[in-house]
Image 1 (cartoon, one colour):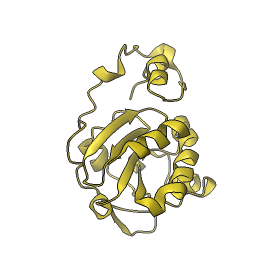
Image 2: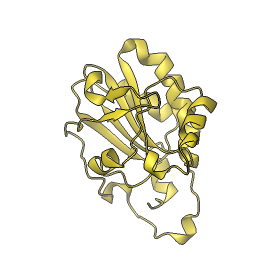
Image 3: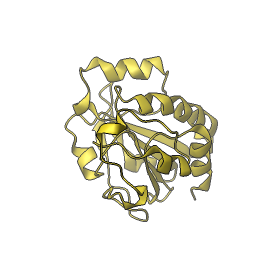
Image 4: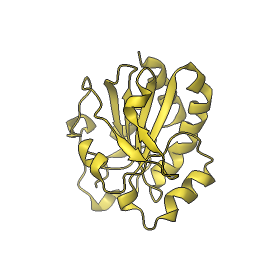
Length: 177
């Protein structure tokens, strides 16, 4: 994991939050990051169990605009953006929008942390659990949070590494075809 210079991210609408940046090498341009998957590619299938043991598949959301988010309960920036995601999910879910928030379970300190996080934030969208880190490898997740904006055909339209504020999230949701 690494920290990105927050001034670059601020220009992209991402909240200026950093933790311990002084001990990491500064990345001059966020567009130079190799995040694996690229805009225009079909989003790879995700098939995971959620906290209740139910199967959650990304492909079942085909036909909807999707915010695919990778997060962990210990991630401060994730803590900040999740309430925005829930608010916008409630606002747009009846208009064909879905949130698919994959918990990076292999990085959690204990099994209860993710569940406590979900309850604390009263999250109602699907929370698939990536217990073995398979999906994070498939999506080449290099830091948390990472978000993919996916159109109704399952095509990746935008990728963001870093914390998203409500206005930026909403603008990206509305841009999805």
